[in-house]
Length: 325
Image: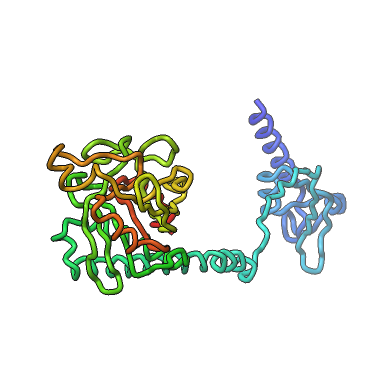
């Protein structure tokens, strides 16, 4: 309905404008009538604009007799006020302002990245070094696991770097991945690249029978504790000459002193016991040695050397504070 009303309105106005008296000389008899001179005139262009745009309204026009062109001023009838939508414009950021945070982040991360790259290179170097020593000493023929030696060497390297090892020439490894019926205790002279001792060693009775399978740092568990130890001083106890061990692997063997975990000799470890009972005996958690060689080994390793009790327990290998330093 509104459309039809607008259309009729346009047609009516157009008719009125088109039938208005001529205002230009030479048209409709040549001369303008006086009464017609005051009437409005609209050119075809203005009429078209008017019909197409209803906001444009004609006002009185007067003939420009010099140019014989009629003017037809027009104005907006009713101003339309529309709300102006202000679009949020992101603040202009200069190249310097935009780059500054990125540069700051890079500068903050750079030392960490450099430290990480340095650590990766260090681990690679230590691993290559351990492989060389392992092969050159023929430790595979002696039954020592290459994995055990690699982790032992990494931990030994880190403890030396810490300054925790006073007696650097000796590295001892108890390879608990092997059966207790095997000679799985290795005392290595690092300086001269030679194996000083290879003998039996017992694990805790709470860790298993022939194989050690469970480990603990808890007092009264009677289980062996995995990890790195630093040898301290000797004393004479119920098992004769004994050597105190300081556990330096946080969370895994740092209760060793409180648990009285020591290196000592005993009668339930050795060839004779194995022959009589078919298997090696177990301790209350200490790495016990055959009585026949225990004193020699204790004197060789005492005074700040490194002892590593190894087992391929992934949780320990991944989280050891000494291996992963």
